Length: 268
Image (cartoon, rainbow, N blue to C red; front, side, top):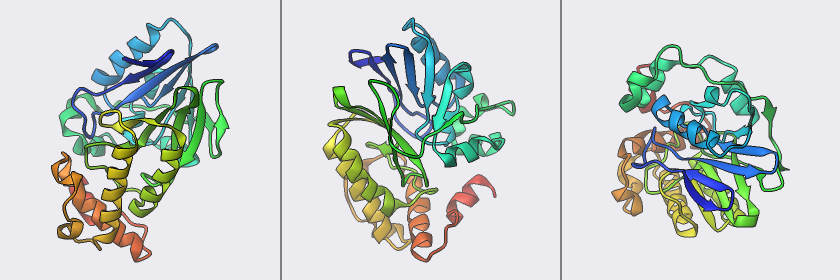
């Protein structure tokens, strides 16, 4: 883990991308708060070991999204309370589908076996709350219907989790790209330093690049060729452009439905 400020750590993927996410750990007087738990055992195993090496009880896990790449390692933190939005609680109360996870993240398919189990939410957070002396948890949304961001205000650091993808095309296929772009204004007000769920640590410029992309998605009317050029032209993860623009177009028609290209990808 990288030390960002006293008691504040980030677990950053060596090669950022979908399935290669970031996580965080913050030490308070009563113990450690973990932010997100990564996807596969090869990721969350070393992360859990590094958190345990801090020598403090692991008291809380905050999930910024219910997506498996952020919640896959919850079972490793078996004594911690699990904090998340109502949507995350509903999702994690249902059994996951490892076959879907393997199709989404083929590089980790061998690790995502049929015995994969995530822990349910134990504490629902649907309003801003001072979770610990060091941390505030703030509801935002757009990546999915309900997300969380964790802010260490004293250090000027926000763990944006699923709400931020820097330098990698985001997955907006289950959210609302236009809403997500608008909600990022709130993220810019929370901290100067942003630890994204995917990609390197950034700040205003990276958040604004993500906003620009999401607004281009919303304006494309379902046509990838209308995305135009921007920083995203060089980002990895281009396979997400099609589901993203389809999702935005469906929402513009008043249809809260999965994008057809995503369903085909998943074999549904």
